[in-house]
Image (tube, rainbow over all chains, first blue to last red; front, side, top):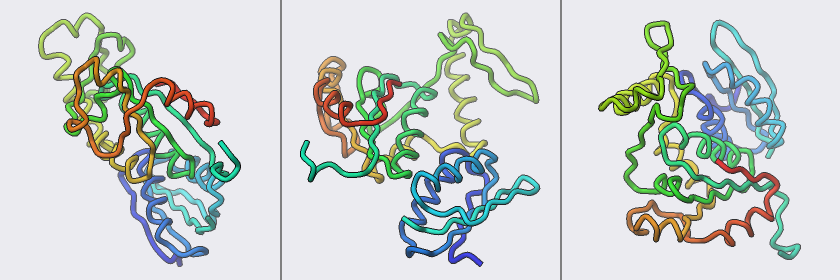
Length: 75
Length: 166
């Protein structure tokens, strides 16, 4: 169970990343954020975002047009 | 630049030269995303790109010179030959189709992206020469941009790992 949930369903690039970043900024270090998205491009983008920023992509799964990511704030 | 002022953050600069609705997207998408990824971003707005800093935006697209433009319509794609832009109302129709698509597909508006760029401390430089050339006033522009010229931009560019011209 993530500490916080962010619903970006229906939003397109780059909004899922921007909203996630904005939410993470106000969270504690080590806290986890669950992101729910419908943008297929978000899969690669959240991987790239996490690699570049040093945050940890704990989970990434897809099903039925819905994408779910769990990000642990590390930076 | 001495060691104390240098940070470990990556840096990116961009020259923004175009002010139409379609061309406004790449610079603002890249600037906001880079800022979200910890990159220090500087945008230099010059020529038609400078109009993207106006408080009130009324962005348009044109089919002229955009020969590859295709609008999805009833499961098909409608091409927009250059010649149709000569017909009165076609560009206005193309603009409203584009704005409808943007809304329907959950794409951010330029106003929204620009606001996020300002919030993310993206540094914006308004080209002084273009301000004079097109007789813009700073009071017509959003809060945040500073005035500067080519040398101001080049100084930023020499310090940036990524430099884009859009």
